[in-house]
Length: 424
Image (tube, rainbow, N blue to C red; front, side):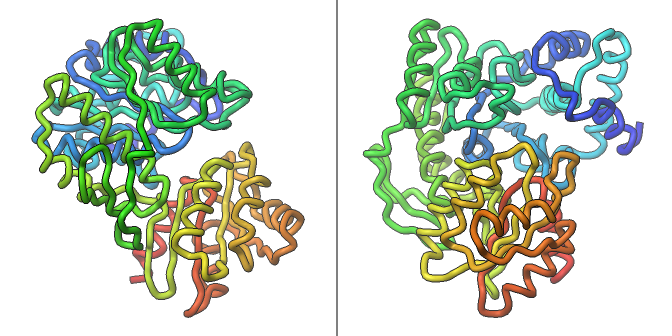
Protein backbone atom coordinates (compact mmCIF):
# COMPACT_ATOMS: atom_id res chain seq x y z
CA UNK A 1 0.00 0.00 0.00
CA UNK A 2 1.33 3.45 -0.92
CA UNK A 3 0.50 6.71 0.83
CA UNK A 4 -2.39 7.66 -1.45
CA UNK A 5 -3.92 4.24 -0.94
CA UNK A 6 -3.59 4.70 2.82
CA UNK A 7 -5.44 8.03 2.61
CA UNK A 8 -8.09 6.44 0.41
CA UNK A 9 -8.57 3.78 3.08
CA UNK A 10 -9.10 6.48 5.72
CA UNK A 11 -11.49 8.54 3.64
CA UNK A 12 -13.65 5.68 2.40
CA UNK A 13 -16.64 7.02 4.37
CA UNK A 14 -17.79 10.63 4.30
CA UNK A 15 -17.11 12.97 7.25
CA UNK A 16 -20.76 14.04 7.25
CA UNK A 17 -21.71 10.41 7.76
CA UNK A 18 -19.90 10.36 11.09
CA UNK A 19 -21.74 8.34 13.71
CA UNK A 20 -21.01 8.47 17.41
CA UNK A 21 -20.68 5.13 19.20
CA UNK A 22 -17.97 2.72 20.27
CA UNK A 23 -19.06 -0.63 18.83
CA UNK A 24 -17.32 -0.28 15.46
CA UNK A 25 -14.02 1.07 16.74
CA UNK A 26 -13.95 -1.54 19.53
CA UNK A 27 -14.43 -4.32 17.00
CA UNK A 28 -11.81 -2.85 14.66
CA UNK A 29 -9.23 -2.54 17.42
CA UNK A 30 -9.98 -6.01 18.75
CA UNK A 31 -9.38 -7.46 15.30
CA UNK A 32 -6.08 -5.51 15.23
CA UNK A 33 -4.99 -6.98 18.57
CA UNK A 34 -6.17 -4.16 20.86
CA UNK A 35 -3.07 -1.98 20.43
CA UNK A 36 -4.54 0.66 22.77
CA UNK A 37 -4.05 -1.71 25.72
CA UNK A 38 -0.25 -1.45 25.52
CA UNK A 39 -0.06 2.32 26.14
CA UNK A 40 -0.79 4.71 29.04
CA UNK A 41 -3.00 7.67 28.16
CA UNK A 42 -3.77 11.17 29.32
CA UNK A 43 -7.23 11.77 27.85
CA UNK A 44 -8.38 15.34 27.09
CA UNK A 45 -11.90 16.59 26.33
CA UNK A 46 -13.48 20.05 26.10
CA UNK A 47 -15.02 22.54 23.72
CA UNK A 48 -11.97 24.77 23.35
CA UNK A 49 -8.37 24.48 24.50
CA UNK A 50 -7.91 20.73 24.39
CA UNK A 51 -5.43 20.77 21.49
CA UNK A 52 -3.18 23.38 23.10
CA UNK A 53 -3.39 21.57 26.45
CA UNK A 54 -2.45 18.32 24.73
CA UNK A 55 0.51 19.91 22.94
CA UNK A 56 1.92 21.35 26.17
CA UNK A 57 1.50 18.08 28.07
CA UNK A 58 3.14 16.08 25.30
CA UNK A 59 6.09 18.47 25.20
CA UNK A 60 6.57 18.14 28.98
CA UNK A 61 6.35 14.33 28.94
CA UNK A 62 8.80 14.13 26.06
CA UNK A 63 11.23 16.39 27.92
CA UNK A 64 10.84 14.13 30.97
CA UNK A 65 12.19 11.24 28.93
CA UNK A 66 8.99 9.41 28.05
CA UNK A 67 8.51 8.21 24.49
CA UNK A 68 5.43 10.33 23.88
CA UNK A 69 2.61 10.10 21.40
CA UNK A 70 0.23 12.95 20.65
CA UNK A 71 -3.13 12.49 18.94
CA UNK A 72 -5.03 15.63 17.86
CA UNK A 73 -7.54 16.79 15.27
CA UNK A 74 -8.14 18.22 12.80
CA UNK A 75 -4.96 18.28 10.75
CA UNK A 76 -3.91 21.48 9.01
CA UNK A 77 -2.39 19.93 5.89
CA UNK A 78 -1.84 16.17 6.15
CA UNK A 79 -3.30 13.36 8.23
CA UNK A 80 0.19 12.61 9.58
CA UNK A 81 -0.02 15.73 11.76
CA UNK A 82 -2.68 14.07 13.90
CA UNK A 83 -0.26 11.36 15.02
CA UNK A 84 2.98 12.66 16.49
CA UNK A 85 5.69 10.69 18.25
CA UNK A 86 8.29 12.62 20.23
CA UNK A 87 7.33 15.82 18.45
CA UNK A 88 7.50 14.44 14.90
CA UNK A 89 4.65 13.61 12.54
CA UNK A 90 4.29 9.89 11.95
CA UNK A 91 6.06 8.85 8.76
CA UNK A 92 4.29 7.98 5.52
CA UNK A 93 5.73 4.48 5.83
CA UNK A 94 4.22 3.92 9.26
CA UNK A 95 0.89 5.34 8.11
CA UNK A 96 0.88 2.85 5.25
CA UNK A 97 1.84 -0.10 7.45
CA UNK A 98 -0.86 0.69 9.98
CA UNK A 99 -3.43 1.18 7.21
CA UNK A 100 -2.51 -2.23 5.74
CA UNK A 101 -3.09 -3.86 9.11
CA UNK A 102 -6.45 -2.17 9.60
CA UNK A 103 -7.64 -2.71 6.03
CA UNK A 104 -7.53 -6.45 6.61
CA UNK A 105 -9.54 -5.99 9.80
CA UNK A 106 -12.17 -3.76 8.18
CA UNK A 107 -12.78 -6.42 5.54
CA UNK A 108 -14.04 -8.69 8.34
CA UNK A 109 -16.59 -6.11 9.57
CA UNK A 110 -20.21 -5.82 8.47
CA UNK A 111 -20.64 -2.33 9.97
CA UNK A 112 -17.75 -0.40 8.43
CA UNK A 113 -16.00 2.22 10.61
CA UNK A 114 -16.18 5.96 9.93
CA UNK A 115 -13.26 8.20 8.95
CA UNK A 116 -12.58 9.34 12.51
CA UNK A 117 -12.78 5.76 13.81
CA UNK A 118 -10.25 4.66 11.19
CA UNK A 119 -7.74 7.42 11.90
CA UNK A 120 -8.13 6.87 15.65
CA UNK A 121 -7.49 3.14 15.30
CA UNK A 122 -4.59 3.88 12.97
CA UNK A 123 -3.09 6.16 15.61
CA UNK A 124 -3.34 3.45 18.27
CA UNK A 125 -1.57 1.01 15.95
CA UNK A 126 1.20 3.55 15.25
CA UNK A 127 1.69 4.35 18.95
CA UNK A 128 1.86 0.67 19.89
CA UNK A 129 4.27 -0.15 17.07
CA UNK A 130 6.51 2.75 18.12
CA UNK A 131 6.57 1.53 21.72
CA UNK A 132 5.23 4.77 23.19
CA UNK A 133 5.39 5.04 26.98
CA UNK A 134 2.61 7.61 27.09
CA UNK A 135 0.07 9.10 24.69
CA UNK A 136 -1.72 12.41 25.10
CA UNK A 137 -5.08 11.72 23.51
CA UNK A 138 -7.42 14.49 22.36
CA UNK A 139 -11.12 13.70 22.04
CA UNK A 140 -12.63 14.39 18.62
CA UNK A 141 -16.19 15.32 19.60
CA UNK A 142 -17.96 15.00 22.92
CA UNK A 143 -16.31 12.27 24.95
CA UNK A 144 -18.66 9.51 26.10
CA UNK A 145 -19.22 8.09 22.61
CA UNK A 146 -16.10 9.48 20.92
CA UNK A 147 -13.90 6.89 19.22
CA UNK A 148 -10.99 7.75 21.53
CA UNK A 149 -13.04 6.61 24.55
CA UNK A 150 -12.24 2.95 23.97
CA UNK A 151 -9.32 3.24 26.40
CA UNK A 152 -9.84 1.63 29.80
CA UNK A 153 -8.01 3.48 32.57
CA UNK A 154 -6.33 6.77 31.68
CA UNK A 155 -3.55 8.05 33.90
CA UNK A 156 -5.59 11.25 34.04
CA UNK A 157 -8.71 12.64 32.38
CA UNK A 158 -8.45 16.36 31.62
CA UNK A 159 -11.54 18.50 31.10
CA UNK A 160 -11.04 21.85 29.36
CA UNK A 161 -13.50 24.69 29.00
CA UNK A 162 -17.07 23.70 28.10
CA UNK A 163 -19.26 25.85 25.88
CA UNK A 164 -22.16 25.45 23.45
CA UNK A 165 -20.88 23.74 20.29
CA UNK A 166 -22.12 20.79 18.23
CA UNK A 167 -25.40 21.30 20.09
CA UNK A 168 -27.37 19.21 17.59
CA UNK A 169 -25.31 16.18 18.64
CA UNK A 170 -24.08 16.84 22.18
CA UNK A 171 -27.04 18.73 23.65
CA UNK A 172 -28.33 22.29 23.88
CA UNK A 173 -27.22 23.18 27.43
CA UNK A 174 -23.83 23.42 29.16
CA UNK A 175 -24.89 20.64 31.54
CA UNK A 176 -25.80 18.24 28.72
CA UNK A 177 -22.54 18.91 26.88
CA UNK A 178 -20.55 18.55 30.12
CA UNK A 179 -22.18 15.17 30.70
CA UNK A 180 -20.94 14.00 27.31
CA UNK A 181 -17.43 15.34 27.99
CA UNK A 182 -17.44 13.76 31.48
CA UNK A 183 -17.83 10.40 29.78
CA UNK A 184 -14.03 10.17 29.57
CA UNK A 185 -13.75 9.99 33.39
CA UNK A 186 -13.15 6.39 34.42
CA UNK A 187 -13.76 4.66 37.75
CA UNK A 188 -11.03 5.43 40.26
CA UNK A 189 -8.91 7.34 37.74
CA UNK A 190 -7.92 10.93 38.58
CA UNK A 191 -9.36 13.88 36.71
CA UNK A 192 -8.37 17.53 36.28
CA UNK A 193 -10.87 20.21 35.26
CA UNK A 194 -10.33 23.81 34.29
CA UNK A 195 -12.16 26.30 36.50
CA UNK A 196 -15.31 27.27 34.61
CA UNK A 197 -19.08 27.60 34.97
CA UNK A 198 -20.65 25.99 38.02
CA UNK A 199 -23.06 24.24 35.65
CA UNK A 200 -20.18 22.30 34.07
CA UNK A 201 -18.20 21.85 37.29
CA UNK A 202 -21.24 20.37 39.07
CA UNK A 203 -21.43 17.69 36.38
CA UNK A 204 -17.71 16.91 36.72
CA UNK A 205 -17.86 16.83 40.53
CA UNK A 206 -20.92 14.55 40.56
CA UNK A 207 -19.41 12.20 37.99
CA UNK A 208 -16.14 11.93 39.90
CA UNK A 209 -17.99 11.33 43.18
CA UNK A 210 -20.07 8.55 41.62
CA UNK A 211 -16.98 6.89 40.14
CA UNK A 212 -14.66 7.41 43.09
CA UNK A 213 -12.32 9.45 40.92
CA UNK A 214 -10.27 12.19 42.62
CA UNK A 215 -10.89 15.59 40.99
CA UNK A 216 -8.55 18.58 40.88
CA UNK A 217 -9.97 21.92 39.72
CA UNK A 218 -7.54 24.58 38.57
CA UNK A 219 -7.34 27.71 40.72
CA UNK A 220 -6.91 30.89 38.64
CA UNK A 221 -6.77 32.91 41.88
CA UNK A 222 -3.27 31.49 42.33
CA UNK A 223 -2.19 32.65 38.87
CA UNK A 224 -0.05 35.76 38.75
CA UNK A 225 0.77 37.04 35.25
CA UNK A 226 4.12 38.84 35.22
CA UNK A 227 4.68 39.57 31.53
CA UNK A 228 2.76 39.29 28.27
CA UNK A 229 4.30 40.10 24.91
CA UNK A 230 4.11 38.85 21.34
CA UNK A 231 7.02 36.50 22.14
CA UNK A 232 5.65 34.79 25.26
CA UNK A 233 4.01 34.91 28.69
CA UNK A 234 5.66 34.68 32.12
CA UNK A 235 3.63 33.76 35.20
CA UNK A 236 3.55 32.15 38.68
CA UNK A 237 1.13 29.40 39.77
CA UNK A 238 0.69 27.40 42.97
CA UNK A 239 4.18 28.16 44.28
CA UNK A 240 5.96 27.76 40.94
CA UNK A 241 7.68 30.99 39.90
CA UNK A 242 8.58 32.51 36.54
CA UNK A 243 7.13 29.85 34.26
CA UNK A 244 7.32 30.73 30.55
CA UNK A 245 5.15 29.63 27.65
CA UNK A 246 5.73 30.82 24.06
CA UNK A 247 1.97 30.55 23.33
CA UNK A 248 0.80 34.15 23.64
CA UNK A 249 -3.00 33.98 23.71
CA UNK A 250 -4.69 34.92 26.98
CA UNK A 251 -6.57 31.63 26.92
CA UNK A 252 -3.29 29.70 26.96
CA UNK A 253 -2.89 30.79 30.57
CA UNK A 254 -6.18 29.01 31.30
CA UNK A 255 -4.94 25.93 29.46
CA UNK A 256 -1.51 25.81 31.08
CA UNK A 257 -3.05 25.73 34.57
CA UNK A 258 -4.68 22.44 33.58
CA UNK A 259 -1.32 21.21 32.32
CA UNK A 260 0.42 22.10 35.60
CA UNK A 261 -2.25 20.47 37.75
CA UNK A 262 -2.16 17.37 35.54
CA UNK A 263 1.62 17.16 35.95
CA UNK A 264 1.14 17.35 39.74
CA UNK A 265 -1.37 14.48 39.57
CA UNK A 266 0.99 12.38 37.45
CA UNK A 267 3.91 13.08 39.80
CA UNK A 268 1.83 11.96 42.79
CA UNK A 269 1.05 8.74 40.96
CA UNK A 270 4.65 7.80 40.25
CA UNK A 271 5.44 9.56 36.99
CA UNK A 272 8.99 10.91 36.94
CA UNK A 273 8.68 14.50 35.72
CA UNK A 274 11.33 16.84 37.09
CA UNK A 275 10.72 20.54 37.54
CA UNK A 276 13.37 21.22 34.91
CA UNK A 277 11.60 18.94 32.43
CA UNK A 278 8.34 20.73 33.18
CA UNK A 279 9.79 24.18 32.56
CA UNK A 280 11.76 23.24 29.46
CA UNK A 281 8.84 21.29 28.04
CA UNK A 282 6.54 24.27 28.41
CA UNK A 283 9.08 26.59 26.80
CA UNK A 284 9.51 24.26 23.83
CA UNK A 285 5.78 23.88 23.08
CA UNK A 286 4.75 24.69 19.53
CA UNK A 287 1.11 24.78 18.47
CA UNK A 288 0.14 26.36 15.15
CA UNK A 289 -2.89 28.48 14.44
CA UNK A 290 -3.76 29.62 17.97
CA UNK A 291 -3.22 33.39 18.13
CA UNK A 292 0.06 32.83 16.33
CA UNK A 293 2.16 35.64 14.87
CA UNK A 294 2.90 34.76 11.23
CA UNK A 295 4.94 37.84 10.39
CA UNK A 296 5.84 41.20 11.90
CA UNK A 297 5.84 43.67 9.02
CA UNK A 298 2.97 44.12 8.54
CA UNK A 299 1.79 42.26 11.63
CA UNK A 300 -0.26 39.17 10.77
CA UNK A 301 -1.83 36.94 13.41
CA UNK A 302 -3.93 33.84 12.94
CA UNK A 303 -6.30 32.17 15.37
CA UNK A 304 -8.32 28.99 15.02
CA UNK A 305 -11.40 30.50 16.73
CA UNK A 306 -14.31 28.66 15.13
CA UNK A 307 -17.23 29.17 17.53
CA UNK A 308 -18.58 31.99 19.73
CA UNK A 309 -16.48 31.00 22.74
CA UNK A 310 -13.35 30.92 20.61
CA UNK A 311 -14.21 34.31 19.13
CA UNK A 312 -14.67 35.73 22.63
CA UNK A 313 -11.25 34.44 23.63
CA UNK A 314 -9.76 35.92 20.45
CA UNK A 315 -11.32 39.27 21.36
CA UNK A 316 -9.61 39.10 24.75
CA UNK A 317 -6.27 38.57 23.01
CA UNK A 318 -6.89 41.51 20.70
CA UNK A 319 -7.76 43.69 23.69
CA UNK A 320 -4.51 42.66 25.41
CA UNK A 321 -2.11 43.04 22.50
CA UNK A 322 -3.71 45.16 19.76
CA UNK A 323 -6.21 47.48 21.42
CA UNK A 324 -4.52 50.56 19.95
CA UNK A 325 -5.35 49.78 16.33
CA UNK A 326 -8.17 48.82 13.98
CA UNK A 327 -7.65 45.58 12.09
CA UNK A 328 -8.36 44.04 8.75
CA UNK A 329 -9.96 40.63 9.35
CA UNK A 330 -9.90 37.67 7.00
CA UNK A 331 -12.69 35.31 8.03
CA UNK A 332 -13.83 31.92 6.79
CA UNK A 333 -16.33 29.72 8.63
CA UNK A 334 -18.26 26.46 8.57
CA UNK A 335 -21.94 26.92 7.74
CA UNK A 336 -23.05 25.04 10.87
CA UNK A 337 -21.39 27.48 13.29
CA UNK A 338 -22.93 30.53 14.99
CA UNK A 339 -20.92 32.88 12.79
CA UNK A 340 -23.21 35.85 13.40
CA UNK A 341 -22.22 35.90 17.07
CA UNK A 342 -18.57 35.45 16.10
CA UNK A 343 -18.79 38.48 13.79
CA UNK A 344 -20.41 40.64 16.47
CA UNK A 345 -17.72 39.67 18.98
CA UNK A 346 -14.75 40.84 16.88
CA UNK A 347 -16.49 43.78 15.17
CA UNK A 348 -15.28 46.42 17.70
CA UNK A 349 -11.68 45.72 16.60
CA UNK A 350 -12.37 45.81 12.86
CA UNK A 351 -12.11 48.37 10.12
CA UNK A 352 -12.96 45.93 7.30
CA UNK A 353 -13.32 42.25 6.45
CA UNK A 354 -12.33 39.89 3.66
CA UNK A 355 -14.54 36.79 3.58
CA UNK A 356 -13.16 33.49 2.26
CA UNK A 357 -14.41 29.96 1.67
CA UNK A 358 -12.26 27.36 3.50
CA UNK A 359 -11.59 24.08 1.72
CA UNK A 360 -14.37 22.01 3.27
CA UNK A 361 -17.75 20.76 2.14
CA UNK A 362 -19.17 22.36 5.31
CA UNK A 363 -17.92 25.87 4.46
CA UNK A 364 -20.19 28.88 4.21
CA UNK A 365 -19.69 30.51 0.78
CA UNK A 366 -17.68 33.71 1.07
CA UNK A 367 -20.35 35.76 -0.72
CA UNK A 368 -22.94 34.84 1.92
CA UNK A 369 -20.47 35.46 4.76
CA UNK A 370 -19.59 38.91 3.37
CA UNK A 371 -23.27 39.79 3.16
CA UNK A 372 -23.86 38.74 6.77
CA UNK A 373 -20.80 40.65 8.01
CA UNK A 374 -22.01 43.90 6.48
CA UNK A 375 -25.53 43.22 7.74
CA UNK A 376 -24.27 42.66 11.30
CA UNK A 377 -21.61 45.38 11.50
CA UNK A 378 -22.13 47.97 8.76
CA UNK A 379 -18.44 47.54 7.89
CA UNK A 380 -17.08 46.81 4.40
CA UNK A 381 -16.76 43.10 3.68
CA UNK A 382 -15.31 41.81 0.41
CA UNK A 383 -15.79 38.24 -0.88
CA UNK A 384 -12.27 36.91 -1.46
CA UNK A 385 -12.88 33.46 -2.91
CA UNK A 386 -10.73 30.56 -1.71
CA UNK A 387 -8.28 31.04 1.15
CA UNK A 388 -5.08 31.78 -0.78
CA UNK A 389 -6.83 34.10 -3.22
CA UNK A 390 -8.52 35.89 -0.33
CA UNK A 391 -5.26 36.16 1.59
CA UNK A 392 -3.61 38.03 -1.28
CA UNK A 393 -6.53 40.46 -1.25
CA UNK A 394 -6.45 40.78 2.55
CA UNK A 395 -2.72 41.54 2.56
CA UNK A 396 -3.26 44.18 -0.13
CA UNK A 397 -6.01 45.82 1.94
CA UNK A 398 -3.89 45.63 5.11
CA UNK A 399 -1.00 47.51 3.52
CA UNK A 400 2.43 48.11 5.04
CA UNK A 401 1.19 49.87 8.17
CA UNK A 402 -1.89 47.81 8.98
CA UNK A 403 -2.58 44.65 10.96
CA UNK A 404 -4.28 41.52 9.65
CA UNK A 405 -6.11 39.00 11.83
CA UNK A 406 -7.14 35.68 10.25
CA UNK A 407 -9.77 33.57 12.04
CA UNK A 408 -12.96 31.51 11.74
CA UNK A 409 -11.83 27.95 11.06
CA UNK A 410 -8.87 25.65 11.55
CA UNK A 411 -9.57 24.34 8.06
CA UNK A 412 -7.94 27.44 6.55
CA UNK A 413 -4.76 27.44 8.65
CA UNK A 414 -2.86 25.02 6.43
CA UNK A 415 -3.52 27.07 3.28
CA UNK A 416 -2.46 30.23 5.10
CA UNK A 417 0.78 28.62 6.28
CA UNK A 418 1.55 27.44 2.77
CA UNK A 419 0.86 30.92 1.30
CA UNK A 420 3.35 32.56 3.67
CA UNK A 421 5.98 29.84 3.08
CA UNK A 422 5.76 30.34 -0.69
CA UNK A 423 5.97 34.10 -0.24
CA UNK A 424 9.43 33.89 1.38
